[in-house]
Length: 322
Image (cartoon, rainbow, N blue to C red; front, side, top):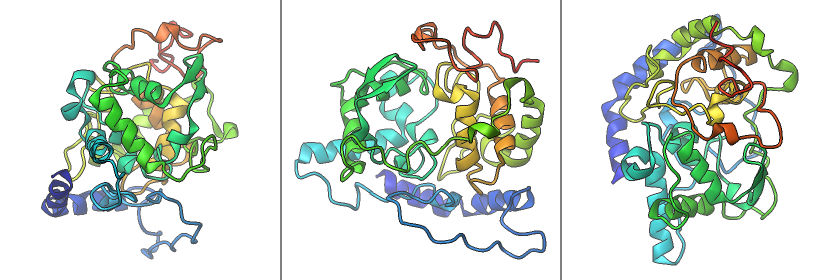
């Protein structure tokens, strides 16, 4: 069972985890103050149904709501779908092979099974659909949104709405969304954003500065080549190249990716990058080649693509390639 394997991996990779934490502690924004005194614990806040945003790498596989531990739907078919949904979430290229075109998993972006604060949590999202998305120019169902992730972030194809994979992922997301009022947006959604007044103009983004920060803060998990290092208990996804997200994915937008990096990364000390640092790193990552999404010319039918959509036709050439 996957959860058992994860436990074994944790014990087997204790030395690797110690090394990663040590590298992070030596980098800017590490786990101690200048005089060697550990920083004060953050003030307590109202409990959320999420793994805290500041949780370290040792909690990368923790779940607030776990199908192996918590009550499942009474219908055994629905219960099995929920359990399968989490497995697909974690092992997407393996268990949804027919619809995946790279080495990314759902959990690479939606950490802790979509149950982590400020890491694109999915808790409660089932209650927010249907919803309008400007990129598509129409109302979307939850299944439409999942299909879009397969096409863009996973650089694959859309599973049919009645497929085993789609039903399992929908069942899992609905299960972790139980108890959320229909039509209300939970307060923890949409938090991976940098304040508009702190956004740097595209022309001020510096991929070379981003590369310096990446080499200092990110290679312990992602490697110099950005393809991700197998840590045993976790495998970060590729950040560029043919096995990464394509140029029509949300992460291919500079400010979108920067907001994620700002609050969810580095995994060892999440939230330690500044607004400016996160934007330069996002510019570095999205100055790289990645697969092309063939249908992106049809995106944003109501107007021009956003200014940070650097792979889109609004730019004759990626403006970060200087």
